[in-house]
Image (cartoon, rainbow, N blue to C red; front, side, top):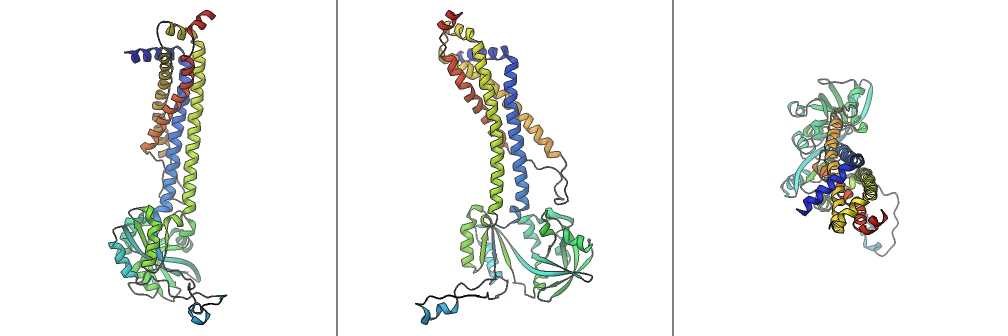
Length: 419
């Protein structure tokens, strides 16, 4: 009953200065609205960029890099074991780009319980022949089913379909930039020759656009068998094995293990995309900083309004204390008043934030670099809504605490005597 009475008094004090209370509530509403909108938009944008870069990047990539032997023959000769050896102009040994025993490594990785999926790849440097002109590029031989399951390649195909690589024996999916240079379209034939001298005439079954001009202007996809023929190799020849794990955080540890076991170089996703991850983290940090600043500014508004209200309601506070209300009761009255403002402003902020985010989500966003993206990306994660309203309540509680504490210490005798 006591708290119900305190809430009733707080509500009456609130409505007595309704205009100021509404202004304070608007400050909280605006802060929550912008917090939800900014976080939804910025994390949605980060998700889009992650889709362009990280989601198409294997957690671990196994490959065979051309490099000089770590231990030279002279270092193994016993006559020079106690000598200081200085070697210059060491040349790398070309052992080929293929992975050692790639087919067996692929099968072993498929059986590893820590691995979610494995996609083999055979890359080959090629020339696209256009009349008398040769355009350099890169052909990637893929397993269409695994590439789609793990990396959703079809999301970036703007014409044709990925399944065309299965149906057409010598099919090719060209990057959009190459197709524009060659004035080529679906169904056209393209002549390709590799660095080893192998030649092939391929039929265009699709065009894709990744949004990365450097990739779209050089890269194309073919089946594994076609890429292996262009490289002049057999069915077990792979230049890369792309691995996705159940636990992404274990990528650095497992990359070292797989490199040792399968006698190959390995790079994990954290190392390959360290700069990109840093950029995403900084963007999120900026969004949080701006949004929290807005809520803190709204809290100062509530603090000032409550201070003014206490000054104007000295008589009412004195009467409350004279009629038996303790300092703690008076403190609770003003804290409840502050929390009413925070709760009402927070709820309205949630509604306006969701409405504004929904509006942004349907706004057209059309760019030639990202043809599969039609609207602005927005993240509607409930965590941001919960965080926003929680921080609003915390801010208004802190903003109301100091004026409430001040009100609880007012001596009614001094107020009445002053009057």
